[in-house]
Length: 520
Figure 1: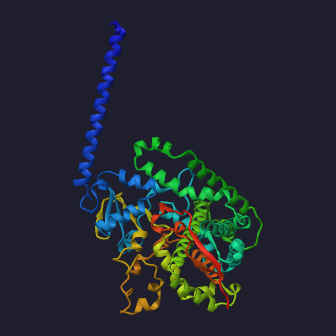
Figure 2: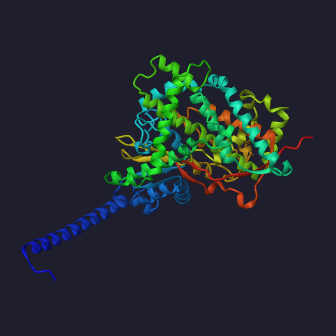
């Protein structure tokens, strides 16, 4: 035992005071937490909205689901239990009712609700077109790039699309014919191949140079950056839900993840600068932007906005199309009767894949119905990142919202809701044919098709809608013309419902057995 001296006495007193301070701090935090929970559950303006107590009391369940990639399926279960409007956090609601599209994104007399700034991509100087919160700034950026995404611009870009899709068919044919001498087909993971073709096309259209994924049959290093950017955004949003702890929580984001996002930004900036300095007369996305810049199209914008927008376009224009194609092909392989109808339509309409054009494919009714059904069951953006209610409050689907309330649309669950679609979990393209829409005796006559908006609505509708549909039509039509599909062996089969989501879908291996089509 230490002898009692003035110094030891001071130390004991200081230790006692520190211990007491810790107790007071712990007691204060406990009281604050309890009061916060009581307020959220019983006195908050949203306390009467249906939802589980554990989600409404604190945001911890929400954040846990977000960083684990289960938020879409967790929300879906909540909607199945509590209905079309669910309180998923103290100040956030999720919607699966069709009216949410207009109330949130396209209201009649007021501006659409702005995006929640917490969902911005971390580590960049300016946000791109998808993540910009300010509606006026978003409008200026959209005006800058809009000419590149018109139907007339798409016609001039068609040769670029055709070239890469033809190369994709060549590569797949090589695999099928070399596997067991081509006698029994080959089980192929279609995820990388759809990523290869969409990534190469966007690289050429946006930057004037392909990533050569199809040429080398390998992933470009940028794809690793691409697939991790949405995940980094989910981690960053999770941290920003706790402003007082954000500076600490941001260090919990894995360093490799942060570095990949920064590398992505750097690569985009270099490619944009190279393309801007390239003398070329061909029509692509950047050629239209260059014209706008020459006409003072950058008024109120910076090159950081341009760089960030092209980074986002690269993700949105490749990953989303690849995701939908993976889902469609996976469902077709598991539904041979639907595949047979599609194959009959395509193979009877064309004598050669070289006859397929963007214009002619628009008229193939079953092809378009298959894509629509794929988008319903496998939306590339399963969960629309939240918007926030206006400062003075808003009303969404009849629910009064205090200012700052976050609201989101769960597109995945909306498309699978039996209140919106007949037999919602089955892959039935016929629900989008004219007869289903006009015949009162059709089981799909009462489907709420107004709930189906895979490209969103309003002033922030996807700018690449026409390009994305063109890519999907061409790739799917040529794939079905060239090959027959079958499900892979059982242990390689994929259930779409098991895939995780970090804003965008995290695709694992998706195998499909491809065989060269039998010709009479």
